[in-house]
Image (cartoon, rainbow, N blue to C red; front, side, top):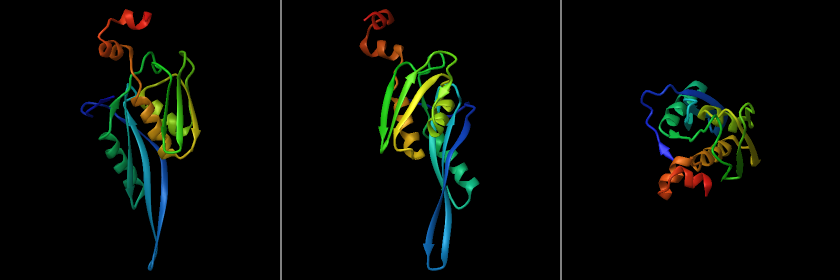
Length: 167
């Protein structure tokens, strides 16, 4: 996983979920909003953030600012991921499987936002367990962080690319 600075990046933000929170006090009810946002350049850089505020627009803006602080690089190979990957966060479990060109992003709401923002165009994804969008986004991010491309594997092992492919 490689952290990325957000200088010179054209980041697009996607709203994953908004949650209205009610606090009951002696004077009545106080409403606030929390928003989970995913930002990415659709070219291998992605991050997520959580914003909380009294208004929806403020919460979204805070979420975008938080997401820009947590950017990292995803190894995208020909529009798909390099290998199969699973991850778990809380009750949410995700399974990502590489797909051939033209398949598209076969994923549910929260996972789709993360995968499309990261620049993955062909992937099969399945969420198992919890459908909580917060945990699904975090589990998908964990799965993407654990992905390794062929070049890093060869570099870590100290061998050539032929040796990695041919065993």
